[in-house]
Image (cartoon, rainbow, N blue to C red):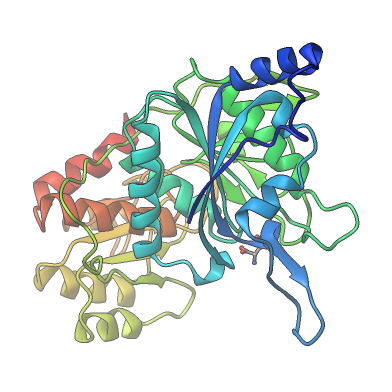
Length: 360
Ligand code: ASP
């Protein structure tokens, strides 16, 4: 559902010229689109439910933010209202189409997407890979529900709109912005389960900080990795499970994935991207079947590097044709492989080149 919200308060009378001037000024404010998808920012604890559940419409969410109408003309697209643990890649591909069409409109300064924080970093990364516009796209949400005292949702939404207005010339791509801190989509990680200060960028650092209507820049994001999807991609995206390596893992889940239709796999290894012998053997079986296999790591900083040459070491994996995930955590590597397969098909050269861009 699409709603245009002028949000200008009570209409002015024709005789009130001061009010007229103020209305005219507001009519000249930049236009920012807000696409709402759900998450804690739109949830409330209601009677009868076991906990917080989706409860607030996109328009109501925007109406709850004091001061928003003084800085921008807001358009709301009430796309869905889901906890982000329910989001599927197909939802994000659809979201990407909606955002792309909005960005194509010249009069739009940028887009804010409200989203649950649980999978926000993945969603933001996928849109960062797919969108080509230079206009700001800001993901935000909340850690406290709309019914909590001290809910962080309204402040985060106001900051997100401010960021759109203040960062039009920065070419930051898609960001994850909560609690004033701005993270590049590629490096954003949720790091605290319940605290409002949850998203960080690890060793890459925040891009910047928003406070009192000002934006302070700290860093530049890494070069964006981009995949251009053309045509209609409403079909089910390729099935790519993530398998975790751990002490004593024996590859049985990888074999199960191969037997149940995986079109590619991502293995979350240890250290610089290493797995044990048994997992390595199962990964070789996947390679023999012609599947693209990506190795990521459980370590939050640094990147996968071909250091170790023993059975399962990163160098041995690379030699066997396994694709290295760079600095992407497994869940983001999976999305990159997904759109890589959608764009290029199962072409090892092109998929390797795509992931190779993470090392530029
Ligand atoms: N479970 C919620 C979600 O991701 C958490 C949040 O939004 O903060 O939708």
